[in-house]
Each structure stands twice: as C-alpha cells, then as structure tokens.
Length: 291
Image (cartoon, rainbow, N blue to C red; front, side, top):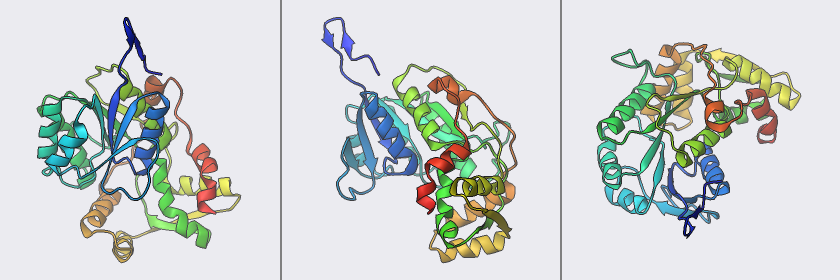
C-alpha cells in the first residue's frame, strides 16, 4: 500500500490517470492501483454504461482539451498509445509536458535500439513515442512488454468451433501474462523508479503460436493444434472481419518481418517482487472464456 500518513496527519493519496482503461490491460492496471489505495481516473473514449470503482474521464488522446481536463490534479500517467502513427501524439505530449506528471509508457520488447528503422510499423511507433516523450523532458519510465497472453483471446471463436486454430505464424517470444504487466505498471506508477533504461517485461519461457495453442488445449482438456496460413490469406481474413486496412497491413508486416527473440528477463520480478507467471497458468485461469 502507498504511504497515506505524514508527520502531521494523512497524506494525499496518489492520483493516477490510466489511458486505455477499458482494455484488457488497462482494466487490470486500474484494479491494481485501486487495491493499493491510489485515486484512479480512467480515460475512455466513451462512457459505455456504468463503470464502478474509479473516476472516469471520457475523451480521446488526440484531443488537447480532453487531455488537459483528464490530467488535472494527476500525479502520474499510465500511457498506452493506440495509433499506428506518432504524429497525432504531439499535442498530447505537450499537455503532458505542461502538467508534468510522472509518465509510465507501455512499449514493446521488439524495439532494436541499434536500428535506424524498426522491423514493422507497430514497433516503429513505439520507438517514435519513446523518443517523443524523452525529447519533451518527461523522463518516462518505459515498460517494454513482450507479447501479451491476452492476445490469445482472439482465438476464442475458432476454439469454440473446432480443434484447429489458424493464423499467420509469428516469431517466437517470451509471452507475458498481462496481469504481470499490470502489476509491474502499478509498481512503477506508485514507486520511485529513476531507471533510465527500459524495463523488459517477459514471461518465463519462449513460445511459438503452436506452443500456446497446445497449452490452451491442455487447459481445456482438448488436443488443439495450430495451422499456419500465408500472409495473403491472413490479410484477406482480417479484412473480411472488418479490421482497418492500415492495422491489417501492420499486423501482416509484423508476422513477416519481426525477428524471433529468445530473451527472458527477471524484470517483472524486479518490479513486483515475484517471478512472472507462465502462459500455461494463464490458460487455466482463462479457460472458461474459450468454452
């Protein structure tokens, strides 16, 4: 729990803005901050019905007036940038600079700090955002996350329909439980971290998509298998599902260009005090979502 007492009585609780607060990760971050006694303001694009348990601000990261209002009285910000272009972030970064909160930015372990250009548009925008925040003098705490386990939720319709999950093959990575990322984010937001280098948040083992599907099958008591499809077929399927064309092209580029990584770190444990959980554990805990 954060210290809520001072030499003359109760101290003001930390007030934290969580962007992307309605998403898979944002919801987890909000829950953890509230459990640790912080005042939480969640930024969402629309109210979407009752959202108990926190203060909610409705607005868009690209709207300077909305950001100014959301940042009022805030000590720290958990920032998730949702667009495939960093240019619209200029005004948002200016508002952050004026408000001067501590910023914890969710980035990607796929960034290659030695490269002039990154492997694909998704990684490039993360590298651009890190640079924007640094150049604005915000000294962000950067959490570079590996592939989130929650991405597997996208397979649920296929799992319900049969025993084969098909999709583009993507480089093997140390898949990380989004709950661990949320714990790390809460620790970074509430603690005093002056680390200049990014934290690299990974799970404990490197997995392919076939590995993940098999582990999900084990949690369900089924023999699931993964079938790789071509980039062209993956593109046509995603477009048919209604995904925006620019996002589809970025996802296809990631499947084709992003290199494999065998990196496994202890940075989750450094921030949270406990080791990162396994994808197998995540699959057991979320098995009901695939039934």
